[in-house]
Image (cartoon, rainbow, N blue to C red; front, side, top):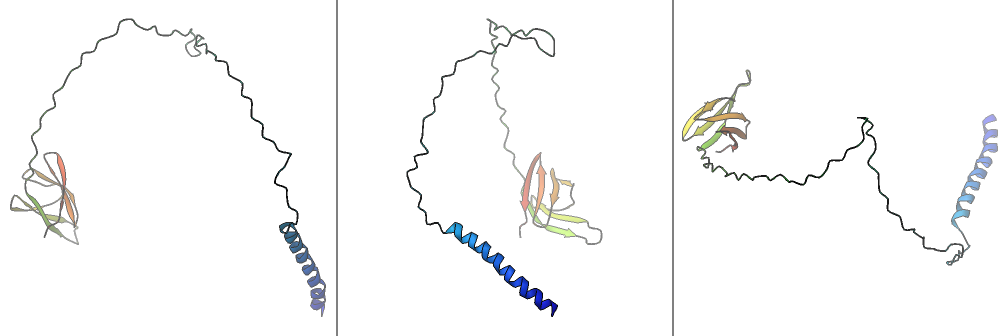
Length: 161
C-alpha cells in the first residue's frame, strides 16, 4: 500500500517536469517573429591600410658566441676558373644471362632442408641457398620463384612447367 502512495505522488510530478521540458523545446523552435532582411546596425566599411616604410636590418653587431664584431666576407674581384672535365662514359658490354629454368623444390619436413631444381644451360642442378653453379648464385627462393645472381646482377626466375 505504501508503494502505491509513492506512485500516485511521483507520477504527476514526472509528467509535469517532462511537460515543462517539451514546452521549452517547442517554444524555441516555433518562432512567429519575422526578422527584417535589412539590418541597419551593420554596415561594411573598408579598412584603411597604411603604407609601410621600408627598414634595413643592421647586421654589424657583436657575435655573441665569438665575442668579436661581425666581419662580412668581401666579394673577391677575381673569380676562380674551373676546368670542366668531360668524362667519357664507359661502354659496358651487355650482360648475357645463361638460360635458367626453375622447375621446383624438394623439401624435407623433418630437417627443413630445401633443395631447388634449376636447369642452367640445359643441365640439371640441385642447389641449396648459397650454392653457385656456372657463376649462377642462388640467393633465395620459395615454391613459386627463386632469386639468382649472375655477375653481380640479381634476377627473379619464376617456376615453369
